[in-house]
Structures are given as C-alpha cells and as structure tokens.
Image (cartoon, rainbow, N blue to C red; front, side, top):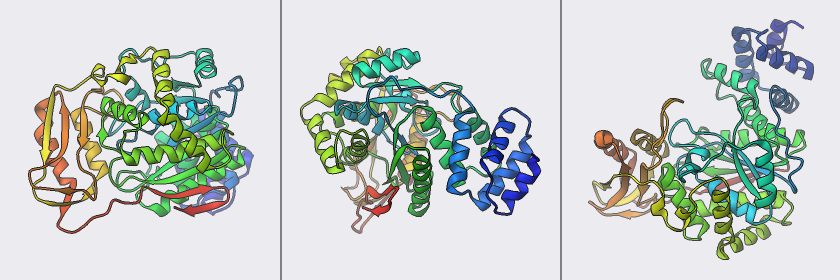
Length: 441
C-alpha cells in the first residue's frame, strides 16, 4: 500500500477504506510513515473532511495503538463525561459524586491542565494528600465499593493520537472537526466508557468560538460514539464568560463543595444538573432527563451527594476536613480587590482573558513543566447582566506573588465591558445533540 496514493485519494475527496486508515495510523505510530507525509494527509482531511465511517475507523485505530482500560468488572453502566474546556469549568468535581450518589458508577481517567487553570487532577490535589496514582485493580475496586474513583491517565493511552496531535499543532490542522472528534472520542473509548456525555463549549472562552462549529463538532462525536456502540449525547453550552464565580484550583474546589451543598452559583448548578441528568439516563437509573434531574436535586437536598464527595476524597488520601471547613484548603497570602471604573451594567466578561489573568497569577501552566499554585486565582463578584456602581468590587484576586498583580488588574479590566445600556447574560444551555438530531434549548 503506497502512502502517497492514500494522500492523493484523500486530497481528491475520496473515502479511505478501514485498511487504508489502519495503514496510515499504524505506519505513522511505528515510524514507517514520516511526518511530512502524515502532515500532507492531515491537511487533506482539513480541506476534504471524513465520512462518518472514516472517523469511527480513525478513532478505533488510535484506541488500539495503546492500552485499553478494561472496566468489565465494574458493576453497572459506566458513563464518562468530557468537556471541551473553558474557564471556571468545575463540573467534573460536582458531577462525579452527584452522579455516583444516584447509583451510576463514575470511573474517571483525568489529566493535568495546560493553559488557563489546572485540570481535574490539579484541582483535586488542592486537598492535601490527595492521590490519583492508583493501580487499575485499586481503581476498579474503589468504583465498586464507593461508586467513584479518579485515576491519572496512563502514558500508553492512545499514543497514536498524541503523536498526531503534536503534528497537527505545528501544521495548522488542529481545528479540523474530524480530527478533533476522533482525538477526543479515542480517549473516551480507550478509557472504558459504555456511554459518553459531552459538554461542548462555545464562545470567546472556548475552542469552538461560534455555535455552528460547536454543533458540527458535537454531531461528529455523537456519530462516532453511535458507530462504536457507545450511547453518546452532547450539550452545547456557553463559554462567553467564566462558569461560576471562581477561577483557580482550590477556589474552584470550594465552589464545587458549595454546589454540592445546594448553595453554588446558578450557572454551575444548572450545567451540572443538565449533564448529570443525561448521565443518569444513560446509566439506566431514570427513564427521562426530567426524572433524572429530580433524582439529582434530591441527592443534593438530602446531603448524599456531599457525603459521597467526602468518601471519595478520603478514599484517595485527601484531607476531607476541607469539605466542611474550607480553611483546610490552601489559601493565598494576598487578596486584592479590582473595582469598577464606572457605573452601569456588566456587558461582557471575556472568559479567555480572565483565564489568562488567573494563569498569570500561577493558577495554570504556560508549559508542561510549570508548577501550579493551587491557592491563587480570581473570584468574580459580578457577572454579565449585573448592575455595578463606580468603585464597587468586580473581582478579588487571590495572589501569593505580588509582582504581576498590577499587570493582572489592568488586563482584567480590559476584559470587562461596563455599559450604560441593559445587558443580558448569554443563554447557558444552547442545544442538545443526540443520534436523532439537534434540539435547540
């Protein structure tokens, strides 16, 4: 099989067979196909796209390039959740214990963050002593006993995807929907999920800046899941402004705890109940999203979701005292108020810029080797649509290193627009994407 012929075939808009896709993925991962040929193929895909079957084949070839986590011995339907990323996106910390309390096992493989704030593991490590270095046996046993466990991703999970992503990153082919969809879904399938709920963000703080492209990505991933026998649904949600009020690891943990207590931010609570309801339905514990939502609301109201979080943190070595007393979480030395330069209504809070501000304080990583400061970040006091008076506090910076505080304050204020006209917060939940199609919400 000649690689150049496969490049030409895709360049001309033709469909590659399963065997041809296997040749490309295996050949590249084994070093038999050079970077320049794989780059040419990726660019051909960027312009010509892939069929639904091609995307499913590419996904499975990347799955089979490395380890596959076997979760067969876990009782029940394992439902995974994936977010395409955002600012203040604390949903996993709420959803894990909440859905587990409803009887759906949560066996989550997570990673560290690169960019605005930490990943799920970084946030959980805000609890002193928390460890995700579990053996597979310990991971499975904990899920069977408690209903929830989080383990660090193995380096051998979808190695072909890691290789291809590194190549896409330097060849301007990252934002190819078929390649994005196959990349995300390969990791979910390799991690052993029976069903998958996707939170596809759209807006200035998201990878997919406009709703149309977000829906296209969601449809591609739902199709892949369906073709591979995994029940998959996607929610399109807003990321024009940060989710919730907290941006930063320990600060987001505290907000997750508040949400599990029933006193969290309205938008974070809503997205968690929406995503969680679909997880519960796929997990077979409810017949409808409405019924599943009522179950989840009950688990928050009766304290069982918070109790499950406490059990989970303690089981993985974390200091669970912080759940009842957040002073046990690491805290910043300096709290600096950012005040409004004028009166009016908050019209915009540019999520990406606010995320960068948090990273400048030390809440995220610019490179893989950077160390995260779990204590630092930003707590918003106003959101889009809120009235603010000149001199009133817009946000509080939590900082340990004060050398960048002035720069962060200035950049934060550039990310905020205060208008003398009324402003309305963007719609949080925009659409539901299933095998049956797209439903605008």
